[in-house]
Length: 153
Image (cartoon, rainbow, N blue to C red; front, side, top):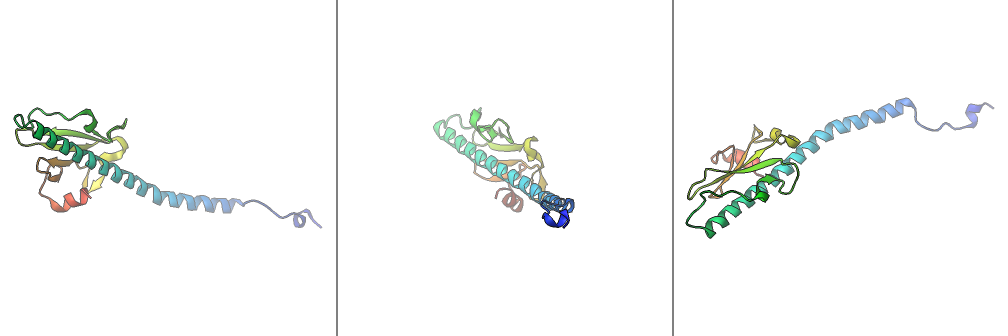
């Protein structure tokens, strides 16, 4: 009786191990980009929520101070970036087009986390806008319904 027949072989062969490594690599190559895109979408949704919250804040400010309107309004610290309390800003919220009765809020993607590379409506790194009428826009345009619908969903 030889030693080989007496003991059953245990463990994995190198080929079996390489097959498992190849399968894991293929799955990772497919899953990781999809994961990154979902993270970008969730950050975009958070920025849009902060943008709408800032628009509500602007409207409350307007109703409390009818004489001055929107002139000279600056957003409070909690509404100037997305995420609101985060240490890294993925979007910066700014106020523009300020006048007595008008404003435009803009969420600009930042390089952190690749937000400036997100894609929506065929655009890369698009900004999101809301004006005093509650209209949603992309890259300052409020009259492109297909792009706006794709980017704001």
